[in-house]
Image (cartoon, rainbow, N blue to C red):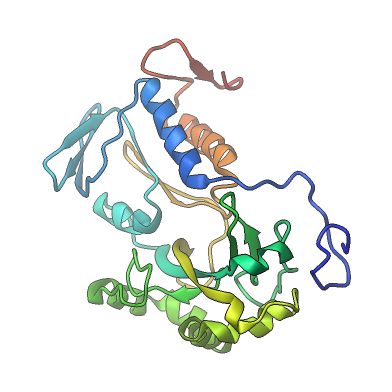
Length: 294
């Protein structure tokens, strides 16, 4: 450990030499380009208003006036997964409760302290992992994330607030069961979110040379966390079918790392649910059958 991460303190470590770092935004854009080259069409800036099922198809109507018709519909809506399910006639459970993960940035003059990804051993008493040290492709080093309740689905800052969305979260019985179970943990996370320098003691458990003056606020993301009515964080796939619509209401973390495997699993689920022996692209020259992928 002293050779691989000489500035990191610890008793023992597991080395993963094949772990890599990517620009996920770039990966997603390239996947979108590949999809379009195969004949697909991306419609951005559309908000789903309703679903209408017909004898041989389903029509998705958007608030922007689009009517999108297809034989079947696969809905992977992330933060809006429960809203899309309700619009198509499903129950809200499991509800999506948005948790914001906030990162800190390590000052450039201390970035040499982190050579690769450093993860703590997870504490099984708590639902989220501890602080990560994550070097990025641009040379920056992200520290975090924490986990705090977001006050709206797209709540990337404390100032992002929606009364209706927050009220929906607060009236969900599963939220209060989770909150009561992790009251101390959640309160600590919120306080350290308001005062980021309080997290330095946690960082110094791993790299002692990091001081309060070495960190500043960084980016944040919102995790689309499915929560059961019993207050349990759902950590596996949740599929729900209604007619010609298949909802993927939850997918296990890490989603980006596992994206290709997740896609294959969803494809298999589509085959089973709709009895599709063969799926192909619009050009018909690349086919995916039950025997494998091509």
